Image (cartoon, rainbow, N blue to C red; front, side, top):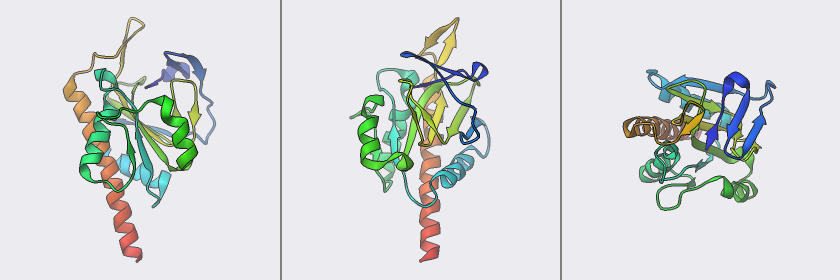
Length: 193
């Protein structure tokens, strides 16, 4: 689960606090959930991050908590789409931060795309970044897509406060954007052959 509070430039998580550097190598974009071009913008960012080398998609989350369900739903949608890449996560085998080290060793940081739920400073937003900040304090040089599905009320993290229809909307947009990216790759590679 990806939790952050941008105004303080400190990432909050269940395991403690850690600061994020403001160096220029960290590219983070916030997209409004209701943007007409959201899906295209995310796909274009993925093309910038990965080029024509398809990433391994790591969908973090749990099927036991609604606010942490986006990664699980995206994994299921991608698996059902027949996407030609590895997709980790889903209902049958939810994936969390504890399996990340093994994937880093197997595939390397530059081949992983993380999808997760999170607490962002802006409502109705999706964050796309070239770095992934896990709640264990680990920063990975792998791109991520984070849906703002976790709320904070009176200093308390509310994991189940998001309506299911909004979880579904986030998940559908993210899964479609990833599928579009793979379609772009196919078009580019087929034109060059």
